Image (cartoon, rainbow, N blue to C red):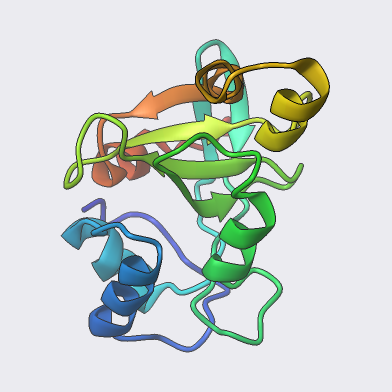
Length: 166
């Protein structure tokens, strides 16, 4: 994992075992690189913090927290967005505009890719089904229109972070 990253605002560290417990509640297995980083840098911002989604520069806000009392507690955030997020997409960080940086487990139960979920224009899948007459499959396909590929792995994602001032 990249060593030249700075994590200036971390909450109290947590154990990788605790992260595994939360992963079980989300029905996913977090990768070792993510667990190591999140355990130590729980809820922190990172420097440098910019990354690209296609031709657009985006900003890493904070890792989601493993502190149950935080508004950014990973389970709370997931539960707030699960009806809008595509299946198999689990958030692990925010950007400052309220978008989510997520793992997408659609292609693999053990090696998720990193995606960016844009909240603008996203609709709850149940609304699409009930109000728009879509099937579950159509609603899921529509939900996936708001996610964009970022990296093949969490480590690859961290390695892409940069500072445009440099």
